Image 1 (cartoon, one colour):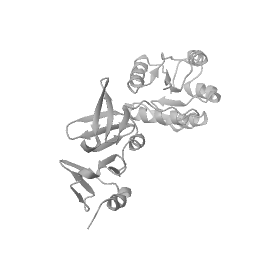
Image 2: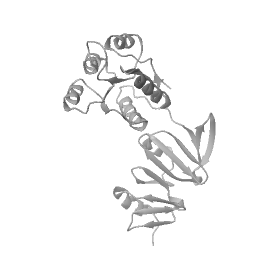
Image 3: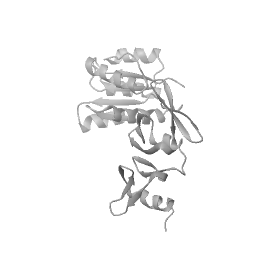
Image 4: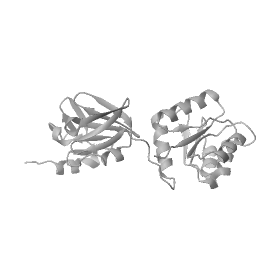
Length: 241
């Protein structure tokens, strides 16, 4: 699998460290952060860079937006970062060919979603690292602490997705890791798991009842919401009298 290298261009050293930490925890490789356009261009000339997290207010004669416009022909996705919620900055960044525009502060979930989206637009499409290693006929193998844990489909109650993170809830444990809901759907049998909400997949075999007035599914001790666009499909999926 190709390693994903991300360059942080940020003039606040403490915030640069925080960004590098988040990038590392998301499974990507943070290059040594720089705080000015000259240093950034030197790194870009020497390294293969997959994405740049670019603060707008950097040191030197060129700000982050000007630098973004300069490197635009290189087709490196640029995510602009700023503390200023200002239309003028946004329009300039848009004209410079930005992929995304994040207002500080933002959390790791938001950053993950933006990075994955940016990487998917690259010509050589990079797939983010997944904790789901492989499947057999009745199970998933989930990697945690350098171990592959076999989790049978029948033990999974439901799956909760937020951004590009999911939680798999079983009868005894909860597994949390980075993967998009779209990718995990592709690894699960459609005759057992059904999406009932934009953030929920449910094990149909474990549904105890459905409250049609509240739009809720009851699974043992769990009550999960049914999204309006999924309700009709769920009802068609069930064997009703």
